[in-house]
Image (cartoon, rainbow, N blue to C red; front, side):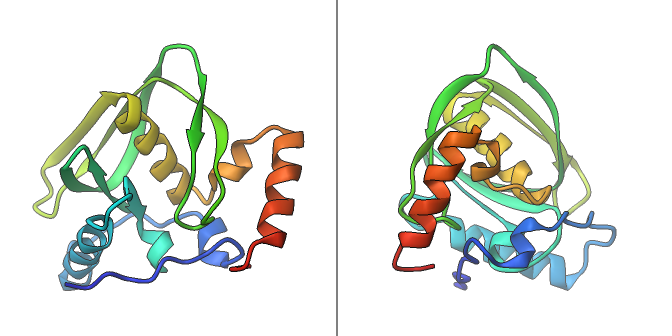
Length: 163
């Protein structure tokens, strides 16, 4: 079991666009194992590859005990009225802010065998799909806050013991 350390706010990999996975090789298979091991810890709903220092389009999820992964995910659908949802992030530990998220989301990607994977749902799954695909696009949830909330959040980051 390899639980990889989580990269924290300020690490350039978190602000970079992740590259698509073109070839499923031993390195990608090892990445998936590490993502799955890393998301199994209590309190983790998702871990994106950039959060463990890898700039590839992949993430794992752990929603109500359902653990899995997706490669090259594309958020193909969001629906409903965006609503404020309390959200935190492993890369910004100790902070919690309301972020506008759609109540329903659908992502499409592939598994290690190249088969299509469709993840679709409401609530926490919808939130996780949006949050993790943001990571792959170089966005943190703090980037989604309005100007005043972001100012407060960045002050909290600067005052944190981990920054």
